[in-house]
Length: 151
Image (cartoon, rainbow, N blue to C red; front, top):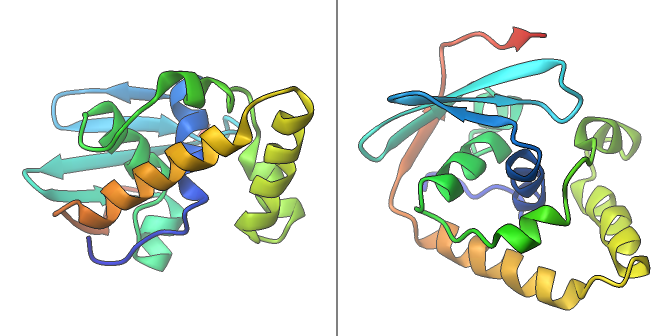
């Protein structure tokens, strides 16, 4: 992978999967944002992936839409029970509130999960497992030329 994303993008990918916001076509996937106002396109050809989400386009690392696609393709580990803990989270709002300090947004979510009795140590272990697999994944990423669709 060209450039590693912040580990917190895995939590966002779990939400996209848990919410059913990832829809596949033959060589592409459409991923709806957590506030349901944008639709991103992830494409791939062999080991070359593109996405038009902000992180992939502007920062040059795999954003949560691409990570979610890689999980659903089986190229990254996916524990659906863990993903289920992240259902219904509006990351757009959280990330705006914390001014893109992703660690703070995740800390708030994890705090809520801990209060609900979720084994957050297990969640952290699984997130780290996915991140380790992401580090080892031999793919290249680039920004997409497809425009973001506003819903």
